Amino acid sequence: MDNHIHLALNASDRSYFAILKKEVHAMAVAGGLPEKRIAELDIIVAEIVTNLVKHAGGGQVLAKLIEENGKQGIELISIDNGPGMTDVTRMVADGVSTKNTLGNGLGAIKRLSDVFQIYSMKNWGTVILVRVFDKTSTAKKFKTEIRSVIIPKPGETESGDDFYSIVDKDYVKLFLGDGLGHGPEAAKAVQAAGNAFMECPHTDPVDIIRYINLAVKRTRGMVGTVAVFDLASKKWRICGVGNIITKVLSPGNSKSYLTYNGIIGLNVPNTLSAQEIPHEDGQYILMSSDGLKTRWDTSRYTSIMRYDLSILCASLIKDFARLTDDMSAVACKINL
Image 1 (cartoon, helix red, strand yellow):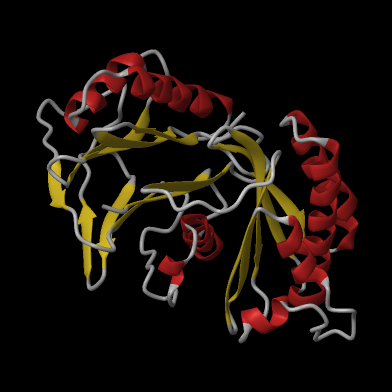
Image 2 (tube, rainbow, N blue to C red):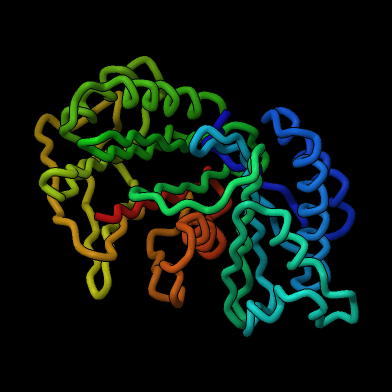
C-alpha cells in the first residue's frame, strides 16, 4: 500500500498527543506493519511530539503509508517553526539536552528508524524525516529519486491535488494535477486524470495532456503539468495547462516553465508544445500547485540538496503554504 496524500496532524500542544498517536498507530496497522515495528513506531511518535512541544512550542506531523523495494512502511515528517539547531549532530547524540532531560529523544528516533534525517536552521525551525518499514531496511541511493508532499486543505479529508509517476528503462514520467476547487469532486477529477496518466501509452507530454483531457471531460476539470525525462537523449520535455509551477534547477541555474492558459477537461488550447531542457549534473525538477505561494525560492535552504527530497518538499510547504486550498510540492532528481 502506498498513499499519495499525507495526513496532517496537529501537534501544537499536549492536548493533541493522544489523537496523533492513535492516528499514526492505526495507519501502521492498516499498512500491515508487524507488531514489533508498530511498537517501535509508537516510541518514535512519542519522542517526536514531545520534542515538538518542549523545544519548538509545537508543530505539525505529516504521515503516509509508503512502499519501497517491496517493503511496506510509513513516512513521518515533523515540521516546526522553533529556534532551530546550530549543531544537529551534537543534538542527536545521547545525553545532550537543552531542557534538563535525559537527552535520549533524537538518538532513540534514529536507532528505531530505517531512514532518519534532520534539516534545521537557526531562527527558521526544523524538519525531521523518518521512515519505518515492515522489514529492517537500510537507506538506498536511487538512480531516480522522486518525492512528494501533498496535504488536503485544512478541514478536508480528500485532496484535489495528486501526483503520479512512472519510471521505466527509457523514461521518467511525472504528472501533478489539481482538480478545480477542493473536496471530493476535485479529488474525483484528479484521480480520473491520474488513472489516465498511468495507462497512457504516449511518451510525449503534449500527447499525454490531450489523453488526460479526454479522460476527465465528465469531471469538473483541473489543471496539470506533465514532465517526461528521456533517458536516451537526457532531456526533460514539459507541458502544462493551468497554474502548476514548475522549475528545473541546477547549481547556478534556474529555469521556470510557463504553462498554457486553460482547464484540462474543459478548454485545452488547440496548439500545445513541450519545452525541452537538457540534463545537467546536480539538476532537479520541482513542481507545486497553487496551494503554495507562487514566489517560493529554494536558495534560502542552505545545503538542502544533500538531504532526501522529502525534506525539500516539506520545507516549501512549511514556508509557502496558503492553507486555503490543497497543497502539493513534488521533487525529482535523476542521477546519470
